[in-house]
Length: 111
Length: 177
Image 1 (cartoon, rainbow over the protein chains, first blue to last red):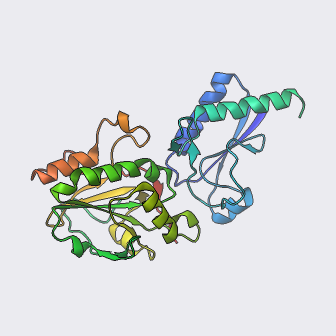
Image 2 (image 1 turned 180 degrees about the horizontal axis):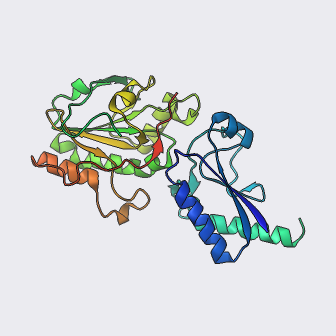
Image 3 (image 1 turned 120 degrees about the vertical axis):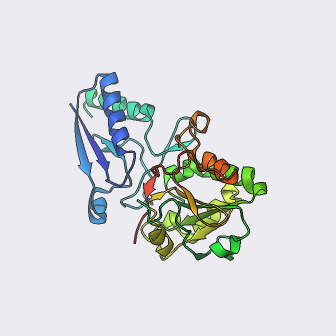
């Protein structure tokens, strides 16, 4: 079973929709996963969790949209790039899907 | 919830702009309508709507409408919201309105702004006539069904009440120090 971490902070207006989107893609792909929902509440916690913004989705510990190391850890909203090049506060279903599929392949290969 | 109610007067401010000049609300006394938008550089919602800010200013400038954008975010924790970055963004996006820096966050606190973007519309007497969001679809401009801000501008310019005077602002929280 895959382990998926969903990190968010309360001030983010898109976290509920993002979590819903994650669950929907998991259902569509028929992937069994343990989804751990983590509410990041302080800047200290953001540093400890290396939280680069809300929402953050980690599949088996890997960020579905890795950010450069220069990004600061903070209680802030994240920007995702859609397939059409526009920015969005939400990860696209395709981005989530690609990460999940890659994780399934890795798991099957025993990596 | 903002500190202002529909019918309240605008709160004065005097802030530095990315153009190197100071801008006060009083300096726009001759404008028919002033739109104060609390916004910022980094918030994806603000970024999704900012082209529409430019378009609104372009569409209504000849009717005496003036948009004033204010960023109040803490730039220490959020360096993308620093004043130099504000200057870059204004140049990159061709902002046709003043983009002002509320470094002390006093103006945001006075207005009771909570989100970016959050819109306050004032008529020629600087009475608040609309407060809230820009429209009902931050993601797809072509799919907007209710352009709340444009509706408010059209109504106020025509001497009428905005059809929806108050809406919930949609966006990131203002990043307080």
